[in-house]
Amino acid sequence: MAFSILLVVTSGLLILLVLMHKGKGGGLSDMFGGGVSSSLGGSSVAERNLDRLTVALGLIWAAAIIALGLLRAS
Image (cartoon, rainbow, N blue to C red; front, side):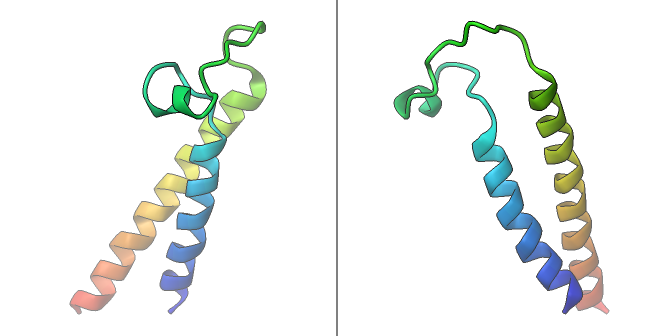
């Protein structure tokens, strides 16, 4: 039960974090205004921290899926 709750929470947070990322040009991000170029250039500290947080949360999400699969298989 705890892994199911963890999976739902991390899934929602991952959706939010991915949507917060800056578009890299081309594709659907341009359609919704993501194609506006920034005068700053390069990735900021906030963007790098967002990347790290997204990767860490993705790893927790994957571990929750594996744990649920192992628990249901046994």
